[in-house]
Length: 282
Image 1 (cartoon, rainbow, N blue to C red):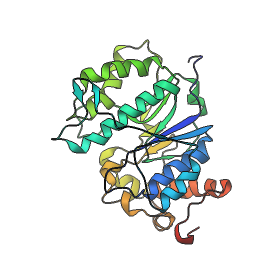
Image 2 (cartoon, rainbow, N blue to C red):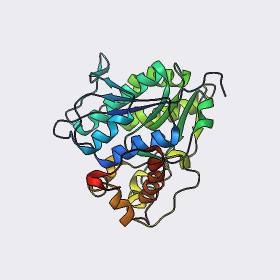
Image 3 (cartoon, rainbow, N blue to C red):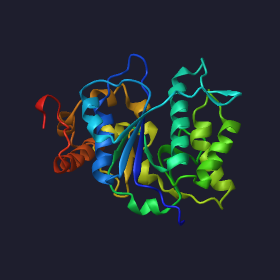
Image 4 (cartoon, rainbow, N blue to C red):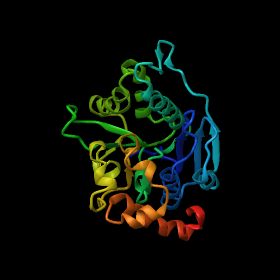
């Protein structure tokens, strides 16, 4: 516990790739659920381009501040972010750079746009830095990872600054996870004196990346300990994520975890007067 409290403001990052300007419904759901459940003092969207589409038009009124960001090119002079052999990692690396620097400067709650907020986190804001364990996959030889899809930090958090200091040392443009998930786990083990609250897998990552059917397809219950759920867009995009275009999907797939969370969020959106219906669907 620390006297340096995490401010109740939320950061989202939306990095627009050329040709992918249309914002999907589940990105709207991320912002709307966070606003309704967490009741933030401010929502900040870090943005590099011009998003489009009906769900962007519904996100915009929910955001208090848009920060246009220049895409970083290096972690330091000898560590370029872009690797032509692994171009799909490029935006993930840039997003890491932006989120860590934003949290170090003003603090707050960082959420990926492929999350759904389930329960308040007020008690966690009493800490200086909060990060969650990821559920270990049987396919993963590494048994301890900390996920960067959900981060909470006081400005100038000592743990966060150490993570940023060491990031270029282990950064590999061909391997996104080395600095983004393995490094914070290493720091938490090697430097136990740094103030950090590592919450269990159930808090943010109750379903793992290799089990996305357990979010979108199979009949399952929401973990009772879950605060926020990461939907693993990179793993679920083609089969599930991009195909969910509104609340009709949730009503037709109410046996799934994702639909349950959307239907629960819908009640809060109605309460708060949030426009969530496309073509009059409400």
